[in-house]
Amino acid sequence: MASHPATAFNQVLNIWSAENWLTKSVMVLAWFGELWTLLFFPHYLGKMRAEELFDESTGRWAEYDELPEKLKLVGKAALMHFITESSASLANVLVREPDEASKKFSRLRVYRGTGSEILVSFVTVEIRGEHQQEHVVESSPGTYLRVPKVELDALLAAISSAGMQQADPPELASAITHLQAGEFQAAYEEALPFIASLNNHLYCDANRICAIVCSETAQWPKATAYWQALFACESSAHNALQCATSSVMADQVEQGMEWAERARALNAESEEMSGISILTNMLSALSRANHVHAAMPLLEQLRDWYTHLHVTDPTFLFGHRMPLFHVFLEKSAEIVDKVLDKGATREWYASMLPDLDERGKAELMDWLQRAPAQA
Image (cartoon, rainbow, N blue to C red):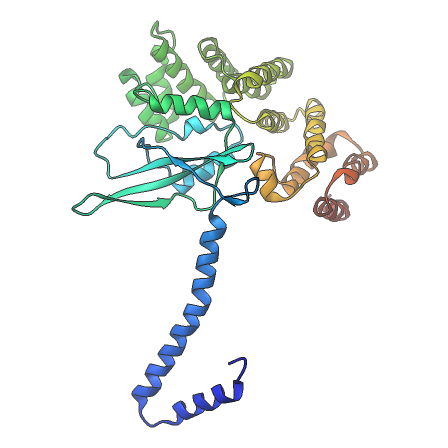
């Protein structure tokens, strides 16, 4: 068509002037088929290639190890929840499939040869047909999770053991069912008798359920007490962070800050989560509880993260578990506008400009121009 448009046009006229309607129909269908082929396959094949992981350090497509253990099905919704929940841990997503006869489950792929990063992804495996053949598809194509090496090693060690997680105590089966159904009061009443159990596993899970229920129902003093009871047996950075945010929501800001420092110290050793997660969770709690003056030092630390990274590309920020830059601007304004006057507010944001990339500078300048109108 490009080299001989007149010839192609004459061919169309000749076919269209034919009296045989069958010839016309067949040719029209053939043309639409060709058009679909030209539009679909380049897009589809390009999309498939773009979703694969390329290792720039070696200049080739990354290779992965697919772990053989069956995991409970990890759907796209669960994966997106893990990604958007900044304090989430991969251990919350990885659960061994208890039914060995299950014909639909997930597996974990581990990409180790991607420079200094360790990335993982999930695939869905379905057993089909008489010959029980495995049909494998990506749970969320193109989505790769950045995992600290220490956390990944611990998870892989757990996977290789007899079971990834200790079975839920049978005494709490009803409480867990109520909790998963959103029936918080019923879950609380079922778990409450076991919060002082001498069985360590039962004690921890009962206090965890009560803590979650009280957090979901905004009973913050009680939630703080339960999280602290859980921390006494499970001294993890995650539990320390829960103590910190619950304390803040209960208006015990000084105590919350102390717990946050403890969470940072523990996380420095265990690397359970990204350091930025502790910061963003504390800022969220302080903002919700309207402790804006206490939030400002933490907000300045978050601002310094952006100026240190110099990059505001959404994909880059997502990979580092950082809030997207426009989200940072909108959420931080809820705090800054209450603490600083208009001139100081503009100066607070403008101080970032020299250390941002061109994209970030343009986004920040546009936001500053719209800020007075929004106010």
